[in-house]
Every structure is written in structure tokens, then in C-alpha cells.
Image (cartoon, rainbow over all chains, first blue to last red; front, top):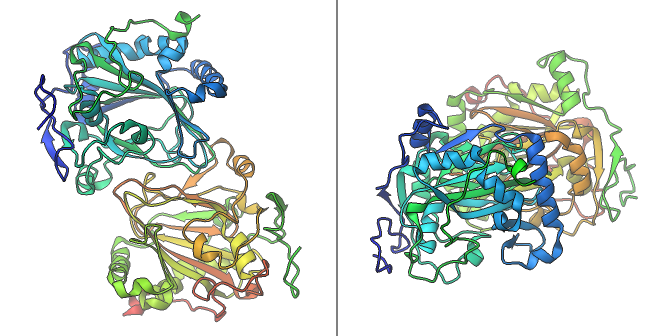
Amino acid sequence: MTNNKSELDFYPTRVDSESKILPRTDPVIYSDSVSPLSKEQTSFFEENGYLIFESLFSLEEVKKLFEELAAISLDESKKTMPQFILEETEKDVRSIFEIHKISNMFDMLCQDKRISDVARQLLGSDIYIHQSRVNLKPGFDGKEFYWHSDFETWHSEDGMPNMRAISCSIGLTQNYEFNGPLMVIPGSHKKFVSCSGKTPSDHYKQSLKRQEIGTPDKQILERMALDGNIVSAKGDPGTVIFFDCNIMHGSNGNITPYPRSNAFFVFNSVHNQLVEPFCGLKPRPDYIASRDFTPIGSVDNFLTNSD
Amino acid sequence: MTNNKSELDFYPTRVDSESKILPRTDPVIYSDSVSPLSKEQTSFFEENGYLIFESLFSLEEVKKLFEELAAISLDESKKTMPQFILEETEKDVRSIFEIHKISNMFDMLCQDKRISDVARQLLGSDIYIHQSRVNLKPGFDGKEFYWHSDFETWHSEDGMPNMRAISCSIGLTQNYEFNGPLMVIPGSHKKFVSCSGKTPSDHYKQSLKRQEIGTPDKQILERMALDGNIVSAKGDPGTVIFFDCNIMHGSNGNITPYPRSNAFFVFNSVHNQLVEPFCGLKPRPDYIASRDFTPIGSVDNFLTNSD
């Protein structure tokens, strides 16, 4: 069931003609610690696969991040870097990968203990950055992003063995209900949806704009999202959502005038380092799936530390 | 400024290379009546250009409508009728026009006094159906509909002289915040946005799927929707939104599994009958812009009367 010779594949995917549901054999929470998250909060995360913290960062802090980001985005010469993913129109920037290597401020941000300590607690170990990026969803014609589990891709295309990674999204703009906010399906992280199809070579070049392989069948989504079981991550700038690597999520397009920007960090446990991709192809580039497993530190405040 | 020889054109549009804002010379409310809407409700409508009534129709009533609609939609032979507008994919039905002529139940529905009396009050006269349709926005890949004022099109392409028409949308499915609900910009009905471009012949064949001519510039939308000034029409099936013919509205796409269906009636005052289209082209077909100006009646309950 796998082309990976050195590791058992507990989550085979893209090997059949239709998608199906497999059990999750990994835990969701990897420690008994009750700090910084309370028992109630870790229980909520275990059950639902996400946690939202309204205004975890202040408007002033977000303003600094946004200024940094605006300066980077204005640099036309950077748009040719592979880290810069453009919209299908080729005009607007959709995402900037490896933002923590491009910007010292964002490097400090991912180590800010308000987020990194949460990831260490949930994953029960030291952590490193598997992926970082900033997403810029423009107003008026921001494109949708179809339902998917990140882990399904990271496992298949990056060789991430187990579900022991946490995503953290920090809103840099107001997330309204109508400007294409992140939507998650609570509880969907507790099953693995093995997807149909076969990964094409260099799939990431296309899938970062519009994912078609590695998405679940409609019937499975209907069952997971029964009776309105969808949560939108809304909130003021500075609001943070943590979500399990395997939760089903996506976002609608955005015709409103309001752009939607967020900073996105994937914390992976140092005990869950990448192996060869399970789909049998060559690994994706480092700026999408890092193979530098050096643990990150913890800083009290990203602004103080990036001065 | 107009190709229409017999009527003054107070709302020239599609004549310049850029869009601009013109004053609305027509009133919003055409009567002093305080029934069925209260003074408070008509004042709200005058100021904001819309009114939402949660569950104006019961779930049982909506069920009957939906059954009727499902039966009509299942009839493959009907899909070749011009009244049936398909999605760009050509597979799914996006809209069915003239639904009140296709179905007796929907004919009674538009006359149901819970909606028709509201339109008579706001327009201060007898009314007729300028357009009726049912919209079926499928789950998973429902397309967005960009910002526009209906009146801009009705004036330009249908020859509707004045702003004296009311739209009424009845939700047939649950309208969540995330399945592409109607969005309106409160207060935008008080100005006329003269749009850029020139109407192509038979524009409706394309514009019913994706409107590109007759849409305002981004700068104008940004100003109108400043600071989150957008309202989504959410609610249980049976929820009704009335909105002014000139309010700026649109809807996002829909990747959720939940389809979104609504019945849509445009009540026009009998004193606002269509003349030649102001864009100078031949009128759109009757099933899109009726030239049968016979006033509709008022029935107590559409179900009782369609038995």
C-alpha cells in the first residue's frame, strides 16, 4: 500500500479509486499538562480539533506585523521567488511561504510563547516549524480553497509519519463571516479520510492554487458536516485559531471589498520528523515542508525580541 | 445620453468609460400607510433598503414549495426550456425563471398577502410581477454572484423607467453564513451607480451566469461597504428578505455541502411599466422581464388557494 520502504504507513491515501474513512490511530493530545491550556481547553480541542482565542495578539502588535508584511509584499522583485505563490490571475500574491525565514519579526512571532507553548503542550515535546506562510486573500476576487486535511497532504507528499502536528493561524485583518474565513468541521480530525486518485509529479505547483487531488468525496463531507456542523473562524485582527493537522477545513471565495490576511505556522513534534513521502515521489521543496528539524525557542513577546 | 426617444433617462448607465455615483431622484417609500408594515419598519427600509422577516413562512409551507420545486427540477426535459439557466458546468440548474407561470403553487405564493401586501404598501399602488425565479445554488461548487444593482440592469436592458420595484426572496433552505447567502450593502440603494462599459447584444445569455457589464468599480464598492457595512440574509427556511430594486447586493461562492435555494419575486408598480430599453438594444425575453402588466391579486394563504 505504500512506496515508502522504511516506515509503516498507517494512513494509506491516493491508492484507490474512491475515498474512504480509516481510524485515527494517533492521539490528539500528547501530554497531561494543564498549562498554558486548562483541562477544559485541551478537552475541547481533543473533541473538536480546534480552539479559537479572540484577540490573542493586540491590534498594535498586528499593526506591526501588517506593516512588515505590506513592506515585503510591495517588493516586486520578491514575487519571482518560489516562496511567493500568486493567484491564478498571476497578479496578486496568494501566499508567502517560509515567512519566518524571510522576516525576523515573523521568526520571533512563531516562537512567541502565547502560541509556541500551546503547541508544545498539545504535542508533548519540543517542536519545530514544518511550514510557515502568510496568506493574502484579496478582496473582490479571492478564490475559494476546497475541503482538505493538511495531514493527508503532509503524509502523502512530505512523508510526515504521524498526526502529531498543530496548525496556528493568526488573523492579520478582520475576519468577517463574509470575506472567506477559514471553516473547520468540528470532530473531523478523529478519522482519516483516505482520498482517491494518484499524486501527479510536482503536484504542489498546482495544488497550492487549487487542490483537486487529496480532497474527500462529497458523500463523506456531507456526513461529516451534517446539520450545519461547520465553524467559521471569525474575529478581530489578532484572533488566533489552533487546529489539529488532520481537521477537515476550507474557505469560500470572497467578493467583498475586505481582504483577508493571516499568518500560518505548522508546529510539528520533533518526534514526528519527515521521512520519504508516502506517495513515492520526490519530496516537496524545503520552503513548503522543512527538513530542518531544529527545535524552536520560546520568547515572551515577539516585538520585544525582534527589536 | 440615451437611445430611448420617448422617455427621459434619469439614470444613464453604460455610457462612459468609468462608473460614477448619481443621485437617486425617486422616493424609496411610495405611501404613508402603516400596514402591514409599521412606521418603524418602513423607516428602516427607507434608511437601509431591506427588511428581513425570520420564518415568515412555516417549515411546513416551505416543505410543500420545496417538494413542488424538486419535482420540477427532476424533469430533465424542462432543462432545455429557456427559463432554465444552468451553471457554467452545464450540469446543474442555477435558476428557473417565470416560476409563477410554470407552477400554480408559486403563482399563488407571489400573491400571498404576507408578501404582496408589503410590496403594495411600499410601492403605493397595484403591482405586477416583473420577474420571478427560483435560484438553486448547489453545495460544493456554487458560484459567486458579483455586486450589482438589479435596477441598473432592469433600467438599461428592460426599460424600467423608475426605482419603484421591490424584490422579495424567500429562503427554501437554511441560509447559513457560509453557504453563499445574499449579501446587501445597507444604504447603497440611495445612490445610483452609473456603470462603465457598453451592453453587448443578448447580454442576458451570459450575464445570468456571470455578470461583468453593469457592475460598479471597486473604489465605489469600497466606499459603500466601509467598515464591514454588509448584511448577510441568514435564517431558517421560510425567512424572507425584501430589498429595494437599487440596493447593491451579491453572494459568495459555496464550497459547503449545503445547497441554497430561494424563490425570488420582483414586484413592480403598475405606474412603472417598462418602456424601450435605455441601452438601445431590443428588450430581453418576457420570461426575464415581463411586459404583461396585469396587476396580481392578494390571497390569504398560498397553500389554501392552490388546493
